[in-house]
Image (tube, rainbow, N blue to C red; front, side, top):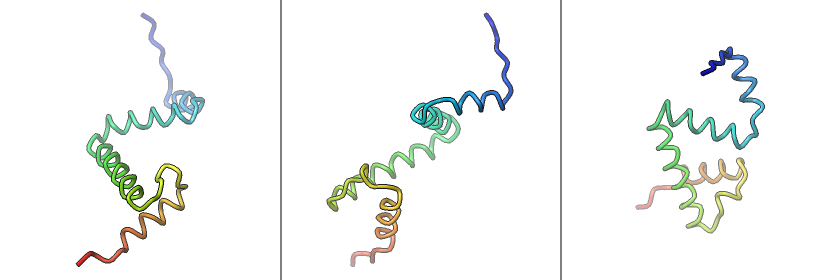
Length: 82
């Protein structure tokens, strides 16, 4: 078996050659390995955001980052129901 030894800079250079989709895939796997609880919470939060948006007639997946931030900000600042 051949062993390839790479420096951290070389690994980073290889990762940067990946497509954005594959880099996201790699990031998700690294996050899940290192911080599984955080990753699970992030998935739960994304699912809840989609559900709340849908309930209000919005499509979370079609919203850009600014729209998502404004939506979340509006929800966070809504008065509590009495």
